[in-house]
Image (cartoon, rainbow, N blue to C red; front, side, top):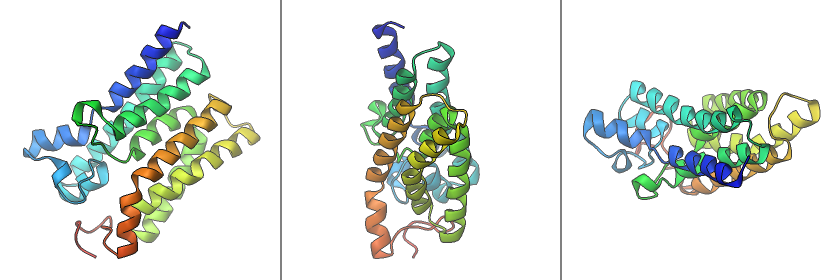
Length: 209
C-alpha cells in the first residue's frame, strides 16, 4: 500500500470521527446545542440524561458505528496493521477534537469501543462486561469509562498472550494505550467533580448530587 493511500485512510478516519452525532441529532430534533446542556459533554450519556433514552441510544450507536467503519475500511483494503491501528486512533481523536465543531468534542469512549472492538473483539467484550459491572455498582458512567479504558491495554496484552483472534499485534497494543491515555485525559473534569461530589449519576440530571 502506498504512503498516499495510507495517509488518506488515516485522515479519512479522523474526518469521520469529527462528525459529532450528538450535536447534529440534538440540534435537528430539539434545536439546542447539547454542549450547553447538563455536563456540556457532547456524548451519549449526557444526551440520555438531558434529552432521553432514544436519543442517547442513537448517539451511542452512531458514535460506535463510526469507530467500526473507520477500521473496517482499511481492513477491507488489506492495509498493514500499523495503518489499521492508526485509523483506530485517528477516529477517536476526531471525535474528541472534531474539526467540524470547533474542536469541542466528546470523551471518545463509544467511538473507541467501536474502533478497538473491531480489531480486538474478545478484549472489547471483556471490557464491556467490566464497564457494565462498574456502572451498575457506582451509577457513574465516567468511572466505568475510565477504569475500562485503563484496563483495555492489559486486556489486549492478555489476549495476545492467550492467542485470541486480533488484528494488529504490537500496533494494536500501542493504539489501545494511546486511546486509553486520551480518554483518561478527557475525563479530568469528571475526576474533579467526583472529588467534589458533583458528578452526575447515570439516573440523575446534572446538578443533582
